[in-house]
Length: 226
Image (cartoon, rainbow, N blue to C red; front, side):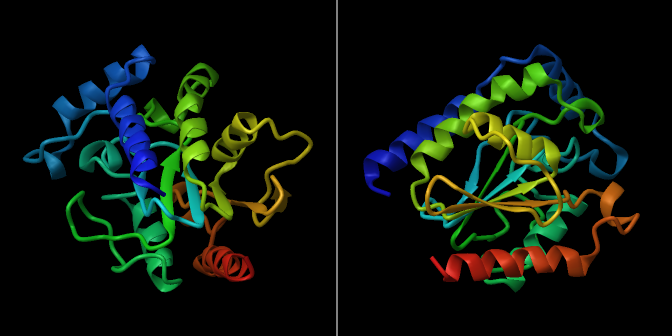
């Protein structure tokens, strides 16, 4: 990525953090940032939409659902400061995409190597359930990122909402979400689907650690072959 493209990505991220297109989400994250929870009562919440994060030359693009109310919405970075972030970062570390196995706060020294993280929705939604209108509003940012992250070889969609958001943004039809599903798209790119590492999935063992690591080992293998 040249300096001009990096400048474009920077402007995309600026647009994201300033976005107010969804009044319900804007009001919710602002309220959460003020009310907080007891364990984080002394922290200043980010309470804004979250930009993407990672290596601009990434071969792996991870698409999540949305920031967690007291995770990314608090810390200001995707998959940081919550249990889902613990799973994502540990797997990235164990497969060589991250320099440390934890993601606790925005300036904790985490560096992604060959991976970039975005989300279908950039604001934490109430009950983790964005509306179709909100997903549609955010799709412009996902599409803008896809158009600038030219090195991407594997797109890993975490959960059906992220999977469907990507498919809609790229006008992909006739494919369905399923854990481990793999699709060849746009010539040399691969779309890979996984259950989201939410507590709802991990605590019930719908998604086990072995299943999760198998996904990331598959990613590493696919990238190595390209």
